[in-house]
Image 1 (cartoon, rainbow, N blue to C red):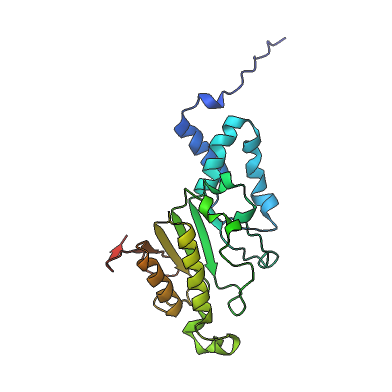
Image 2 (image 1 turned 60 degrees about the vertical axis):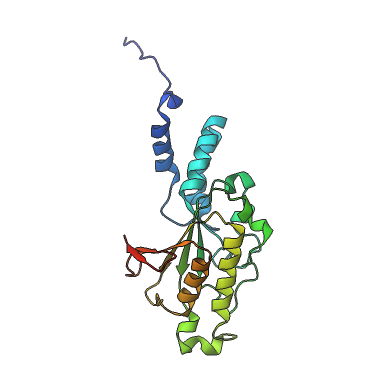
Length: 230
């Protein structure tokens, strides 16, 4: 009869911290923007299993999950777009404080912005002490084409609404030092909406970066107006 091989538990915490972090990243990070979504119970919730292993693993893992992923400020899914309680407002302050990057998606509800899209205390932006990056994704710019004029309160209405949102974010999360723009191909990099948003950011002394999503040259715009190609 063969002698059974003794079982030796794998001592995870004997690994160097750098390696443990890489393992957490492999399990917890996703390239998708995290938002209120009906599929979260399938796509996001299973990742939280490591949170329940032990207190020490929770302390290490939650910082990787919240610090390494990007979270959408206001929901865009049709089921949640009108909610008064966006994702950030549903998080404990301790988790919000670990978030490094958030996204503001502009375009949904352009002719009648959802009532819940307001910068209010329950969003918890002031709790987000680690927040450094704001990603702005623009789906459309109603002010750039007369086609939208008959559906808008005024041509400038949505532009002013978006600038007001951005101003509120920057005022409540003054730790943000870089704003990155991405957009659908139809959005003009120098159109009314983009120009107004960039001007608001420049007046606050923050760095502007353009991503390559729709063919824009990737690089940064400094306070002096210098464009630094990546």
